[in-house]
Image (cartoon, rainbow, N blue to C red; front, side, top):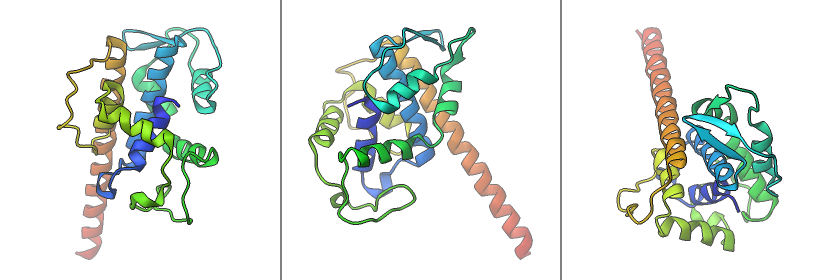
Length: 203
């Protein structure tokens, strides 16, 4: 299982009011893929530039696609650009993959967008899900950092001092947090503009 798979499993297991918004989660998943590629040696960072390494199949469909999608021409792309390019639709892609592999199983077809209904019991228990939740419970810095970056998970009670991410991972986590903040700001602007437009027509 990849970090992106674990992130998806944990996000689906949260109460409905804490659900990560799909766009923000997609950005975090793109960051998770970058972190796993860093860990495998398929990627290195030069500042915030993503320098691809040797192409070696990881054995995970979506992660292999991520590796194949890396820009292999100088000056290479920034982590921020990667998040916005790779992220769109990624949350739905991971949900679909987990369902196809039977790592997520719902007893009846209920959907809220691409999300399941909020009840945790809609999702069958699995070793993969328990492993993902154990990773969070142990305050593993990468997964906790990605969850915190979605701005929907309250991670304040988790002690993250037990483990620190390295500089490259920290760069990715910071970029994810900034990208999610930009996305939320854009969504807020649109909501304000739509409200203003509706008020004009009601006036």
